[in-house]
Image (tube, rainbow, N blue to C red; front, top):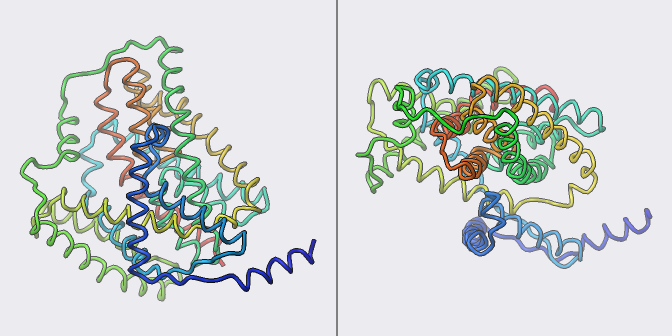
Length: 420
């Protein structure tokens, strides 16, 4: 066996290697994004389970890389500088599209939902690290199968993986993306049936409060934005300028904090919170007129590009030895998330139709990120012919940013605690 492995490693040394430059890598990523869009339109499975086009296109390329590598034909090396840049931009736009006053303005139900999401951050992080120690893998590998890939989804997993990699875990990105893909499918398959079961078991009246409260009005305004907000060249330029100014301040400041304290603070994560701080001040002082729609456009573009590049970089072969431990961790994460949805989320949100819809969405969000939660709730609401407005207002706000306010610092603390 050892002789076979040695000969295999020797053959791999002689594999033809293609070096893909920075522009070609980005162009290939754009093509794969278009391919992913085509697949979603062509095959209902991918649309039904809300699997993003960057995941489809990028993962297809990763599978091709695996085949070429295992057959000793071709290997690829990338200049992925633009991957880092798109990731940095995406993180800053997260901060700039919200403010700290959003939690206060959201009302009691949003506050309750966010608290349960924060609880789930600690639980998923604890399960990841604890099960990693039990199954004999690195805690950094376990944490990547927790909050980043579950509630965070592919975007957050791809964004936080470099933190774990910098601390010595080279397989962080591959684990995060594999766990996030599992979460998308598991959340979609489980969330709807659980919501339906809660409605049937508790004989809930299929009714919801149609009266628009101040809470609904404030939250709707945050989500929909000012109707005068336009996407034009000037607004995009201003939004882009703000992003780069914050990065120019945040990146070196984070390096300085790291050098002084010895606690690794990645620049893009520090810049996220700097963006939240600036947005909170700007909402009160109107230092500059910000366009949420333009910022959202920049955010979507940067997210899609960095995510498809992250999937393209996956080294699937690194999962060979982690298949069983990773499977065990993800099964435990699924069970605990469902139990929290049933016994905590459903009860704390009122034990009514709205609460059942929120519990189902919480499973989709808790296992597979915010868009997945919306897809799950939409399926349940269509079955009963009644849309829960509260649920569709709460989850996008809580899941998009407010969860990360606690999730990201917890992840940083745990990785620094167990990092080399």
